[in-house]
Image (cartoon, rainbow, N blue to C red; front, top):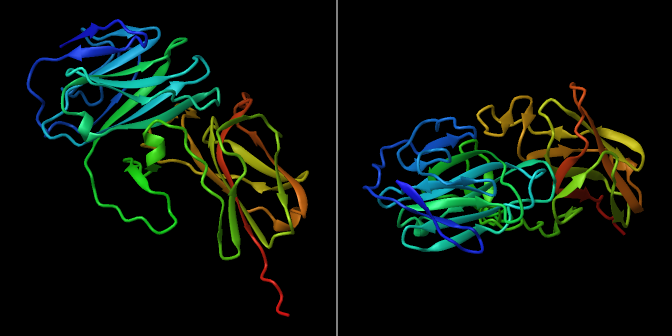
Length: 322
């Protein structure tokens, strides 16, 4: 196998591969780590950076994929550093000359280590090809990648729930918008009986300690729930929630399975769900402010967190009967 560099403004690369597709009996999941470490487990259908004939440049990292006959979709979870680059484009180019941009930019603007999952549908896997990660204006800093063949299975989705597109081996459900490379859209505001559910902010944000989100209420609620996704937080960190200057309780942050690829020593790379049920009496009609603070057992406290999809659920008491 060998890679052939093709001149283009995107510095994309395509791969010429000889040989028969691998047997479907081969392992359907493998993990790549940088630094020349072998794939775990080794598989014949993936050519990793550092293998003979592969292309690795400061601004470009490329994997070769040989799909099996009648392949399922291929899910790729890539871990990367946002702090050291300008952007991260993902492109799939087949030996037939068909090139598809999977994501124009995987960065989410949080300036720390992050991870995203992409799906190459079976319709694009009709020939061997190259998966290229490129920073058009800087260097690529990949921290790892997990490749998983994902056969289609039947899935029932309850009314009002997000449509699921991929369920990881750690049982994380990823919706269609996220795995197609685009920015995740904030869920629409909605009422469910007396409960209002609405987003505080519509895009990922880098959040220093004690930086407040503001929201306005027409009247005091009976119950109040906070839900968000956090990144850049060590698994052993403690997070506190404050409302209008008063301590409102802990933020309960999910601890993923130990099989999750985001664990990196004492750190965790990726988004984790976090929830809180603060006392509703801390809220008042008018402008309210909510913020977070956090501590870790280690002396190096993260200077900021990534926050995505902060959502409030507000329940109002029933109106009194006339």
